[in-house]
Every structure is written in C-alpha cells, then in structure tokens.
Length: 508
Figure 1 (cartoon, rainbow, N blue to C red):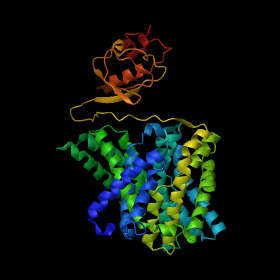
Figure 2: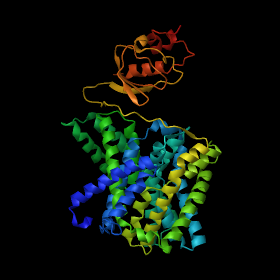
Figure 3: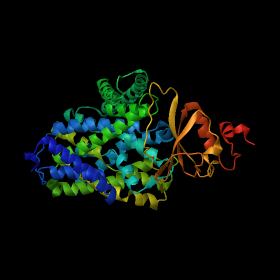
Figure 4: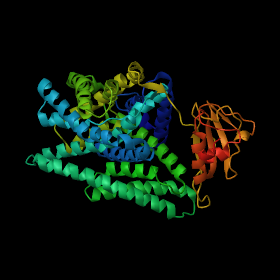
C-alpha cells in the first residue's frame, strides 16, 4: 500500500505513528523502542505497508550517523561532577565488562549450540553493549528513581561501552578478512583507538567550548548548526587519526556539558530533540530491514532464546560480579546492575556490519540480534521497576521541571545566569516568606516550582520543603545564596537572614 504513496507523505505518516507509539508506550509501560521497531516492521514487506527495503549500506550509514548523534547528545546531558565518583567503576564495566560479556556468551554458544567460536564471538561482540537511555525511560514512565550512585554509574557505563562493542565487532570482522592477524596486534589496535578517541574528544571538547565562547554569529538560530558541525568534525577527525569516533563525540559532549559558553541551553535542547529524530529514524529503517516471519523460524527462534538466556542470566551477572569485586557495591546493587543490561539500538546497528562485509552467516546473525534485543527490552524492561523495589533500591523519581521560560548565556549577559535551587526538607528557610529572607538586590527569584505547579513569587509566598527556586543574578552571589538556602534548621537562621545566609559567621 505505502509503496504507491508519495515518499514524503509516507515519511510523515511513519513519524506521526512513531510519536503516537511513544504516547501509547507511556500508558502501557511498553518501551518506546519496541513500538518504533513495530511501526517499521508493519510498514515493511511483511506488514500491511508493503514497503520493500533491503539497502543494507544505507541502513548502516544512517545507523552509524544516528549513533554518533545519540552518543554526543548523551554526553551533553552527562554531568562530569555526578559521574566522577564512579568513573573508575563505570570504565571497568564499559571496557573489561564488555569484553568479558562477549567472551562468556561466545563460549556458551560454542559449547551448547556448537556455533564456531569466532562466529559466536562476532555475534556476542555485537550484543555486548547496554542501553541506559532505554533503562531510564522505562523507570521514568513508572516514577521509579534509583538510590545512591546507581543512576550515574549506569548512564556512564552505557554511554562509554558502545565504542568498545564497535571495536570488538570491527576487530572480529577484520580477523575474518585476515585470519593471520595475531591477538596482541588486535588488542593493541583496540587499546590505541580507545586512548586516541578519548584524548581527541577531551581536547576537542575544550576547543569547542572556547570556540562557542568567542564566536559571534549573526543569528542565534545558527548555534545549533555550529553544534552539528562540531560533532561531525570531532567524529571525523578522531577516525582520521585512527581513534574511535564514537568515544570521541561522547567525551566531547561531557566536556561541553561542564563548559560555560553562549546559547548553551538552546544547544543542549536542540541536540536532545535531534537525537530523538535520529533514534526514531534509525528504528524505522531497521524495522523495515527485518522480515518478521523469519524471526519465528526454528533457525532463529532457538538460538535467539538461548542467546537471551545466556546473556541475561549468566554472562551479564557473572561479568558484573567480577568487575565490581572490592568496589564497595552491596549485593542488591550488584544484582540490579546485572539485571539492567538492556540491549537497545547499538546491537541492531552493529548487526548490519556483517551484512556489509557479506559474512556467510550475516543474515542469521542480524535476525538473532533483532530477536535478542526485543526479548531483552520486553523481559528486563518490563520488570525493572519491580526488581528495583524488590531489592530496596527504588526511590521517587525527581523530575527536572520544564520551565515556561528559558535563559541562555548571550554576549550581553556577562557573568549573570539563572540557577535552580532545591530546598531540602530541613532547610532553615522552609516555612518562611520570601520577604523575610531579604535577598541581595543583585538577585531575583523568577519562579517557584512546587509539585506540578509554577508559582509567581511574591513577598508573601511561603516556602515549602522540596520547592525549587529559579533565581537569576550574578554567578558569585548566586553561589552564596545557594549556600545560605542549604543551611539546616538546627543551625542559627533568623528572619532577616540574608546577611546570615551570605556569611554563616554572622549567625547569632
């Protein structure tokens, strides 16, 4: 049916259906990733849409480009200050963990299913990375947060383990082309790509921040275009100097998240939306590429089920327990980290690499990977919040408010900024009116976010626990105000408090 329609109309309809699927996902708790794939499959040759698509090269190119933008956006949303305490643990899981997952899964496939070891390792390398975006989208939809450092650990691990999976996949395919390649040579090349990619991302990220601080474009709408240019340049340059481009753009994004430059807020919001566009486009194309009837044939169904079982119940848990020995994690945390090894977009993208190389079992590998991703998201995804609560690791999800106004650093803003300050339950200003606090003249309270409402602040507005104040002013004074608002109730804090809040030593 769709093959007879205008291609632009088809594209528009598929995007509309995907967005509608996203809304349906929130209500049914079915991960949106699955629904995007289903839309693509329904539009495909085996579905009512009847579209025939078999251009593996185009799918691989789109998937690679989409992955680069998704990782860049993930880096832009990752605060180094939050991940720094667990960076070492995440890095171990993202490198050694990925290798061990691939090796253990491959060994099980070789022993029980009699798959040749290198073919099994290729399949296992493709499926070895995790998808934290899917994890936290599912937890958000069920209002389930995580205690302690679990969230930054899982976010940083998943953002930095995709490059390792890419390198293992490409390295294994290189071995098929050149069987005389030695393991030390492959390991050395892999290490070099990670080091060069990480260093390139760090240096170019700082360079991008300097550029964005100093450049003056005629139209502020061009800054997101500059952001795209930065991402493409970082990826291409890292690949040119034999580094890993995916790791480079992720590290670059993290560096830029901590930077201070013009129109930062607009840039981050644009790339968040653009990453969603890339993700939906990628899943639609990959859904078109698969033939659903092939997924339920014995040649795919049995290996797919066994690979899912090996991965979920043996390889991932064993890897997590080995990599977190003497790392200070409780048994409950290690069990939960083991269960959050969801497979997402990256394995499906990587499964197009053997197709590009015309590997003899490429089509079978592609279908098995597709099957494993679907089962992983459905089984692990649907049970995530339940497992977190059962292990005592769940807490209420703190949703960052979307304010009805936004602020960007512009050439005219100088050292002024808008900052969100959350009042702790035992803050000394809880229960007091704004007029009692005698804020410095250099700052202004713009909005108060309370529950699901935004309040226009007035002198008589009484502050409550967990209120979030949006305050505008000079950076130095805002830091003093933030310190004052964080003071506990058991500390001295008088009604005319801002002389006290700005200088704790004056408390009486």
